[in-house]
Image 1: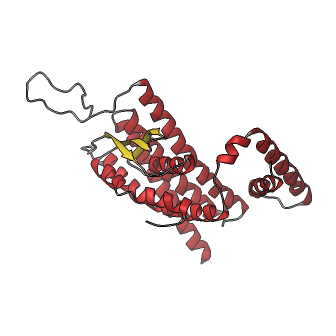
Image 2 (image 1 turned 135 degrees about the vertical axis):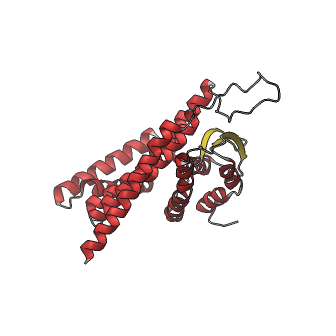
Image 3 (image 1 turned 60 degrees about the vertical axis):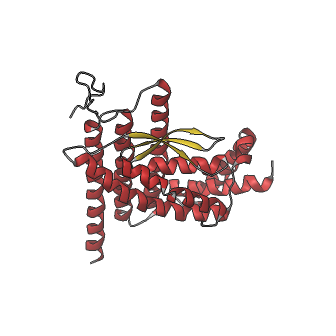
Length: 118
Length: 166
């Protein structure tokens, strides 16, 4: 009985993690510039990796190996926020302007330079 | 260099050692004690200036762990919003750079707030002006910027370090 409950929880958390990894990767392809891509890359992957690691911790029944997974999840959290900040800071210092939505100008032929890809 | 301080960091390192090795026999525990003491001593000698600036106490640590729990819930809720935007075929995003002035003072609270903002989906800390306490934050959409202006995260960080809720 307990096995069934544990396995169900593991499957739920693992599927949740896979879903957010998928969304993060999709966002990396779909979003237009470095800053917005960082949003997808750092956030969805944090939750994805976090819940997969949590699923593994449940699978190990919070034994010593399971606790290692929790520590790893914490380290992933710290790491992704610092690397996200480092990359965006570097991009900002180099002078990459954030992408803006294309605004149609009142004068024909003077449209904004940012062109939407999708 | 205080002996007590070295002992305190050695204790933390030792707990981490036990977590990572996962063995409880005498030889590995003894090796852990030796390594923890050595690393704590070396860190205290080499990084003395940086370590003195860290504010830390057991009360802050407990509140920090509670804060982490709250933060994980926030991340989960906001992540669904970002996932919706990414999966939506029309891609409804309006990215913008936002200036945010915080009232926190000190390096530790400001760093914690910056990391918490970066972890919350939809907002990304790009640059900080430490003296003025101004954050330059990239937002994925208007709603995220408005959520940020609710100052919920800042109040939470303030609670971690001061112990009072506003």
